[in-house]
Length: 87
Image (cartoon, rainbow, N blue to C red; front, side, top):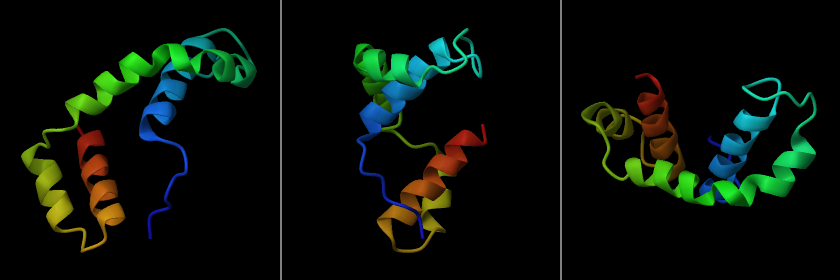
């Protein structure tokens, strides 16, 4: 079963965008960027919303993956996102 998150998708995406810019593990220079991410993730909300808006229309591959995932909405969502990431 897919774990259910208690954090909104917008917040999670905004945090990833912020971390990508700050963390040495991504494109940034800070070896421990978690404190900075906590401080600035809200500045990335508009970008996060833009990312989610692009997912409103699934690709045929995403639909096919969702149809084969069973009846659980969480499993369907997870399968569709996994299909989107295969691009």
